[in-house]
Amino acid sequence: KRAKSGGTYNFFQTKYIDFDNESYTFEITFPKECLNPFQNVQGGMVVSALDEITSISVNILTKDKMLPSSTDIHVTFHRPTKAGLVIGKAKIIKLGRTIVSVEGKLFSSDNKLLASALHTAILTDTSTII
Image (cartoon, rainbow, N blue to C red; front, side, top):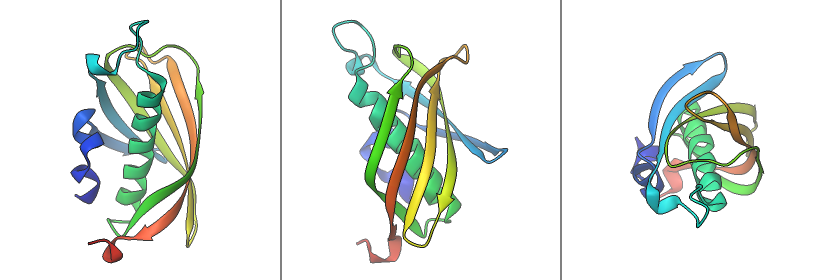
């Protein structure tokens, strides 16, 4: 519930699809407003989408008790991302008491890897958030 309240969630029309084999699957739509002069999705928008799906995955796993506050997101761009629908996958690598590490990947509609990320964050107790 809380993860769906952010502006990024709505901007990318993020949809949680399923949890399967330790991986959370999402649909993300990059609107044309995300495009750079080369007509590819701007890199910062790709990072934002990876941040979104990895963060939501933590919130789902902890049953809305924790939200991640990023300390590092390392992203590798494997090929240009086009506007439209992409598939996001997130896998919790390690959930500690105070820190979480999450792997995120974006795939094209024909299942080609577009970008991958390793997201590290401090866990924030949602009961402390107003």
